[in-house]
Image (cartoon, rainbow, N blue to C red; front, side, top):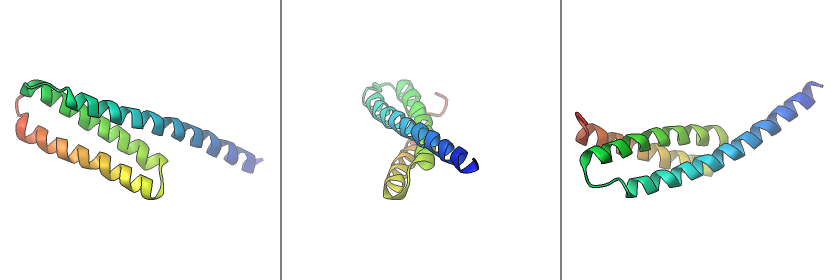
Length: 97
């Protein structure tokens, strides 16, 4: 009985992860599009950059939980790298905005 419950829980977790990764990939594409259309004024860019950082953190959480192997390593590095990069931009260019 415990074996069936564990198998069912794993299958539900796998389905949730598949959905979460799909959503995370979509969020990543949307975040890229928002960066491209951030505008020219610094305040607008800072808002988009902050939103991008938050999105990358959420995406990294999904990738860390749901992926494995080389794909996990690559996607985590990508999302965490962007979080670090845009965090530096916010710290250097968005003081007081």
